[in-house]
Length: 63
Length: 313
Image 1: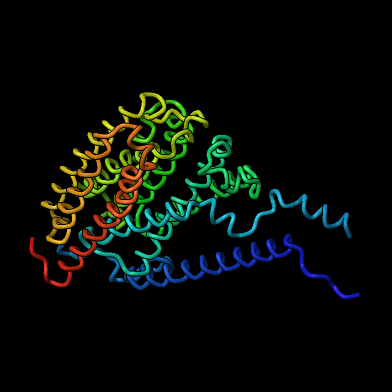
Image 2: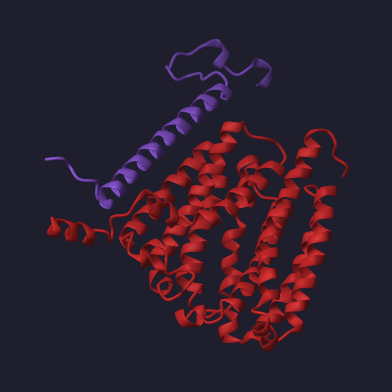
């Protein structure tokens, strides 16, 4: 028995699922892009590993 | 098979397509939000990385859309009574009211948090306040209570350029307040002109629009009064830091046309309006749409000239 043509309901559900999928993919892409830009522009992140390095100490002249 | 088809037909209500959810976000209003927020972002001193600017505009637009969804959730009862709005997803039965509420709340949270992360928390705070102002102050409180609903509620639509400005600078300034005031003062003449030729729509829904509570002659006077103040402010903005030759020329030309239209509306009565099917009011409404896009487009053009080193002011 051959399947009949999809009912309007199925088409709407498919459209909704497709739209939601694309929206989520776009959100992931925006988040990824933002993360790359923020890290690129954020300078060197120091202290994330709790290891003290000389460049993290305040300059002597500033005291 | 007949039984199955009839069962499927009954599920039409509340089983929406993706487009129905997009309609819930008021895409036409969103274009205005995107454009004015972009203008605020471009004319602000300093700059953002293009990716940050894109994300800021996106989340401001999403916040605007969330307000639209919450507005449609709350106003479904009166939307069903007005010809202009009865095709909206909730009164039409394609999206359930609780779905509209859930979508509005979720997008509000996402847009505010993401704008804060993408730009700064001053911009995010302004966006949160805008959503609160539009949904609670305007939609839930003022819209059904006072004929000044449009005046005060118009503030919600005026915030996007301020948010765009704040996304770059992290604060507010005279220039961003002037952009706010431009939209704030433009909103009443724009909507009152619409209310004049939509005739009984607002009265049928019990919304106390000025033309319903104070009569149509009073509405015509109010349109003129607001247009005069708007024209002074719009042209005056041309002499500030964000103004320039393109903006000033645009503002002078369009405000003369807008004033001419407002005077024409003020000078005629309903009999004359009925005779030509509200041609003057409709023309004024159409002009009001171009008016705002042209002003903010001119601000963007002047900002571009300055960045190219061709600034005059």
